[in-house]
Length: 464
Length: 91
Image 1 (cartoon, each protein chain N blue to C red):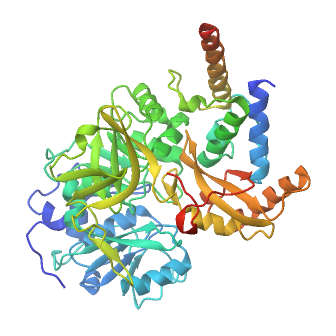
Image 2: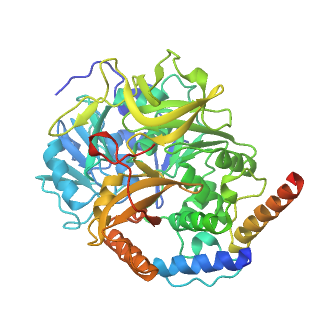
C-alpha cells in the first residue's frame, strides 16, 4: 500500500481546509445531501474500515449512490473501480480476475447481480453521521472502464492527481455554480464534472435510474443548474425536446465526440446567455484542451504549446503529454499508455486547414456513435456469421445527429440472382446483428459490393 | 413525393424494422416521444438524405432544432426551399 505523498491527494484531504458551505449540495433524483454531511458521515453504514486497503468495485444502479461511495472511499480503498451500469456478466468475471477485486459496494438486492467476491457492502445513497472522523489511509488508484477491441473493457488506471489536474488552479470557490451532466459519472466525462463540482465547491445534479432525458432537464431547471455538460449527441437530443426550455445555463460544455459547427451554432442561438465551449478529452488521454471561441476544431496555436498540457500532431494523429493522462492499463499484461517521450496517442486523426485543425475520425476505424464506441471487427464478425456472406467491412458513416453511424460493405459468396434475395439477405444480416449486438452497433446501412480493398499484410484497408 | 409523405413513410418503415408500434403521426407529436430514440432519428436523417440529397441538420441554419413532427417536416421543407432559391440565384 502506498502512503500519501502529500496532504492533498484525495477528495477528502483537498476539501479538509475549505469546509464546504451550507449551499453545497449533491442532488439525486429522490434525495439531496449536503456535501459537508457526505464528508463527515458515511453512506456505507459505517463499514468503511472493512474496505480499507482493498480493491473495491462500485457497482450501483443509482449514480447518486456511486457518487457518495466514491467520495467516501477515495483515500481509503487501495483501488476503486467504477463499474458502468451495463457491464455484461462475462466481463464482470474477467474484471474480478484482472483487477484483483476483493470487495463490492452496491445498492442492488441480494442475488440481483452476482459478483464472485467475498465481501459485499451495501450503499443505498443515504448518509448517516459517522462515529469516527473519516481519514485518508492510502493513495487510491482509480480504474475506469472503456470498451476494447475484443469487446472486453479496457481497465484504465488514474490517480486522484491525474483526475483532478484539469481542475486545479481554478478560481475558488464557485458557490453559485450548479453543475449537471448528461454523462454517467462512472465515465471519464461524467466523473470530471462530479469532481469539478465537488472540489470547486459547487453543487451537482446527478441523473437518476431510468430518469428520462426530459425528466432530467426539468430537474436541472428546478435546481437552477448553471453549468451543463454532455456530448453533441446529448445536446442535439436535448434541443429536440420541449424541456430544453426548462434550463437556462450560463455554460454549455460539449465533449466526447466531434462538436461540429451546426450544434455549436444551434446551442448559441438557443441559449444566447450561455458560454458554449467544447473540450477534447478521453479516458486514456485525460482532458487535453478546451475550445471557447465558438468554432469547430481547434486553433493551430494549441499544438506545440508547452504548458501543463503538450499537444502534438504526428502523422495526422493527435498526441497528448500531460499530468492528466491515465497512468497505465490494468490487466494480465499491464501496459503503459504513453510512449518513451511521455505522449499518449489519442488515435484521433486531425487535419490542418489554415490556422485551425479539424477532427477527421479515428485511426483504428473505431466508430463513435453518439459517444458509444464501436469496433468494426465486432460488427464484421456478426455479419460474417450469415452463410451467404464471404466477407464484410464496417466503416463509419457521417451522421449530423450522432456523429457517426455504422455502415457495412458486404461481399456475398455469390451475387444475388434477384433483388428480392438481396433484400432478404439484408434483413437476415440485420437480424443476426440485432440478436447479438447492442443497438448502436447494428449497421444503419448495408451495401452489397463486389469486392473489398486490401492493404499490405492482407488487412482490410480501413480509412479514417 | 412531398417532403411530408417521404418523412412519414420513412418513420413508419423504421418503426416496422425496430418492431415498435407505429406511432400516431400528428403534427404536434414530439419526435423523441414517438418511440424513435436518438439513434433511430439519426438513421431517419441519413435515409432522408439518401432520398432528398441533402441533410438540413448538417447545414448552418437559423431555424431552431425541430421538436415536433410538424417542426421536423418544416425543417426539411425550409431547407428544400432554400436550395431552390440558391439554384435560381446560381442560374
